[in-house]
Image (cartoon, one colour):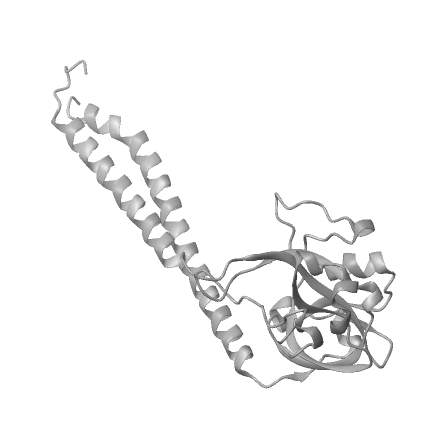
Length: 253
């Protein structure tokens, strides 16, 4: 009976250790699963970026499209820009090299009216702050029918610390085509945007082709960390349990 007393002390801590171990291993397995999904996403996007542009999906299909189906798909579309309804999205343009500074300014998102009367908002590119006023870049406000090649982009989720948009001042911080279309009274507007490729523009602004395609993939590192913590938990428990079993029954400590 005396030998059973130390073992009894290990039951509850042992159960807690097993539960913690299972949770930690589960978190590690979850990261492995997410890493696999991230690799499939990267492969899919890289493939899309290499493909020739395809025609823009017709308006009848827009409501049923999911971002997984179209994100970074290269498309070609034709229409006429509605420059009087452009949206100015606050943003930064990183320099191409360490010697070039980062510019602060706007991404110019302009509705493109298609032949059937529907509208797609096109991110034409970046302009520095001093060119936010369209009158200062009048040459770039191209007229007539235009052919656009670019990447389909999903709406942007609003970050926790991102300021609210101010449609009355045409001051936008989130790339939200639905909210933009609503503020401009565009009834038949796509729920996605197009990031235009870099093409020559009279006057040089806006500068397109600035889409950043980057998918951090740290899931394997996170998985290894969770598994290491799980093994560490077991090691600590067994070291403690060994000490408890060696201790005499009448040891008050």
